[in-house]
Image (cartoon, rainbow, N blue to C red; front, side, top):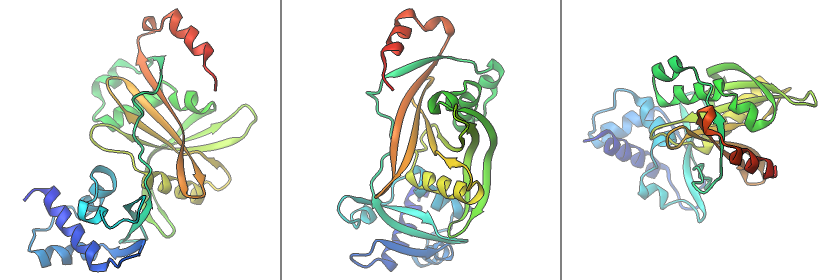
Length: 264
């Protein structure tokens, strides 16, 4: 049995052991993964955490679970403390690059040796963001990489991790903290990660304005960047822009004229 099938059967067992019609939140504990596997006579995955990680960041929850969501909502899994999680029905927010979005060409400043030896898509993407000052360009603030892969504990959530943190200051002297989630390959961006970033910043940097950012590799050296804001229904996408990294000579006079005509 593949990991995908094993994971689906285990997570379905847990969900339906708690589910009641009309509920929007279901709390469960990490120990239940082992109990469900034993009840189903399924070999436990070597890394229990990968099962939760898979449904939070890589794969959709099984269709049997999705069908139980209230109209207009989807089920997600949130951390709820040490060794605890919650199925929560939320308004669907798909963080997927809009393929019809206009591109902006940026002269690629990534050192060749970094491009050659980047170990994976996520690390390569973070490096390109850093060396090309894309967070500065996107936000309009001067930004500095503060720390990458920060793993810490947040009250009522437990352990969370953000891919990179930038500190920034704008022309008025206002200071910001920009948590960045980066995804390449088959991994997908999810609103849960953005919620965690907001909670992390509220806990660790309460004096700074938090502006969460998500980055996604598209085709070639095309990078989609998203920013978010709070609304009455939770976090929503505030803006999206696409930047293509090119050789300096590939930015034409016509390109520059188009950029001059754009409105912010």
